[in-house]
Image 1: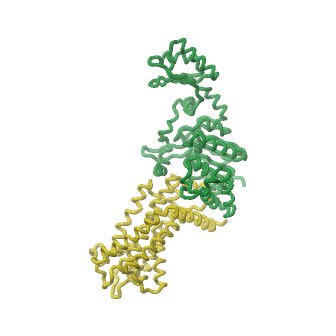
Image 2: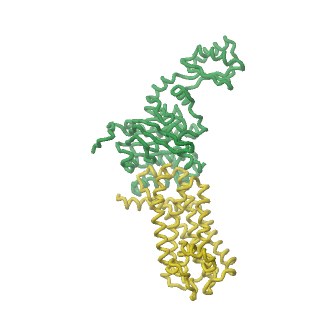
Image 3: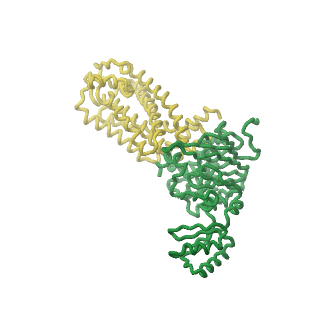
Length: 268
Length: 346
């Protein structure tokens, strides 16, 4: 078998293994769905009345892009914990003693978690529709929006994988996988407009990859109010391009780092 | 093609020279391996015998390509582990000291996954999984998630996993540690079957009787070095025969020791606070009767008296002058290498 065919086959096997594990733990899927639905409802009804959307839009329309991105970003905590768990159980020793592709273990992990992120995204989209989220963008544009979310989720899952391989125990992974996501997602345009932040904070939030992806998703879903003028930062002026570039940069950094960590971490 | 360096005996399945592995630790560094040489002829079983932290697992991890040595060379199935690890992996099976089975997959699924990762092809992997489940007496539980399995069943499944690709060389890292005696005997049977079929086995163990039962030759490891090697008979001859263990009454330890020394084959060992005396003796039950008589004549009150076979601890005492570390204090030189990764699951 050629190297590429072997990598594809091994990735398929490991993805199957991880999805089977997920299916046998339905409570983790249920809680993932409950959590995402809860976020939509909390933000829509608690913040909905308090936040003025620039351009005079409705907060629910504004919110959905942000909550989609936040939730798929949070999926990487799942990856982080799963990696640390496999590492602690000696599963990687077995994998590494087999004549299989080195990158397949990480690729199979991230693909399975991407499938999980897809399920929660669907649950959120349905909840959004129930609380009044609407899209009038062309179908292709909406599909592109979901595709971008998937790309972004996939890139972030690799960050989770690297963290999971770097920590010393599952307990640490539970915190380390999650804690950095709060400042990252809140220091962005996900829940509040950039314009309402202090001047000095605005450039930081604008160059946060989360902001670019949120802006891009809003644009592709047709949730940008008609009169809205994007802040004068390059990533927010060209959110789709900026998002794709951010995702590629993240993958270019974290995929090789993840594979290297896997080799080393498993050899501890 | 024959390479210039790293000459290998033609019949060696496993050959290692001067393996050194150093792990960083809080107090400097730990030499987990300090020059280990091994040679396992094809079709034979080598038992690596030693206490926790002696370097057994580190040796296995190097030979199975999970770790790279800091010095030394090793070939497995004639292949240099450093030069072509992927080819080595195709020729070996590894079963770890804690079963690396996936608890949410069924037994069958676990074996199927391993078969696919060996690239056997779907149909062949399915067939092989079925055969192994049969062979390891796991058919009834085959389609249940393995978290419902007992410890012995998991260990059997883990061993089955190592055999999926019918590798010519198998590494078993403490295959029976933590198992109840019945599961242990069952696993011994399986391993003996493998050996009869011509598989080369390197097994690590803390139990002298296990090495005695399964291994053609034994290498005793302590503090990263091989301190003795030979057949189990040769080692036992070196060790002396059975041990007479006597517990005497208060204030009679010294008298007891003098009496026992008269019967012993070697030095009498004294554990003061338990008032227990241990001595190697020859002659089996005759020695026991002689001892009862001798203690009686000397007026020593014996509280407990018995015979036991030499243990790993006796081997160590004989070879190194120090006791093997007790098993519950798993803080040997290997600990820094493994606790970080494994501690979490406990």
